[in-house]
Picture 1 (spheres, rainbow, N blue to C red):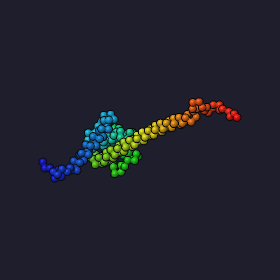
Picture 2 (picture 1 turned 90 degrees about the horizontal axis):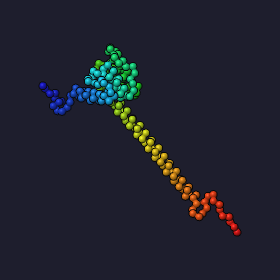
Picture 3 (picture 1 turned 60 degrees about the vertical axis):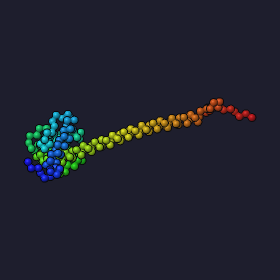
Picture 4 (picture 1 turned 180 degrees about the vertical axis):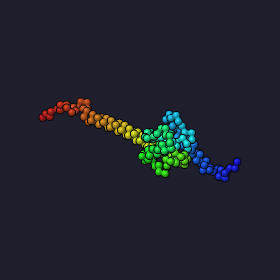
Length: 186
């Protein structure tokens, strides 16, 4: 068999790059599907998400929110396109840029469109994780600040008490506040 010229020099062909990306995104999606306990995994990315059902499940897992209006048993191509369109609309409503993606192309198994969608989904998941880490660090910082403030407040209170005690305590053999003073006798 003849080896393509680009392969001889270590460069991958476009079809090989697409196959690599297909495997990467299949593994990525299957990781989240398996983690969520979903029994159905992706075997062929260009076929298994085209009816919109498994695609909706992946999006729900990623977004942690239910994708509405999914026909779980689509029978016709138009029902499948409606499912995919519902998924794209769901993402669009959450500020995910899905411009340039077509429900029809995804339904028809266009690998470049499907890979584009999964790239967008993986970016969306990364952004969610970053936001979650950011909010978690804010919560931790808030807890540290209030803990530090309350311990500083407690320390300040103790300082004030000891200062007041030192100021108004009676030294031995001397009358302090409230003790009768000697009258001046001449």
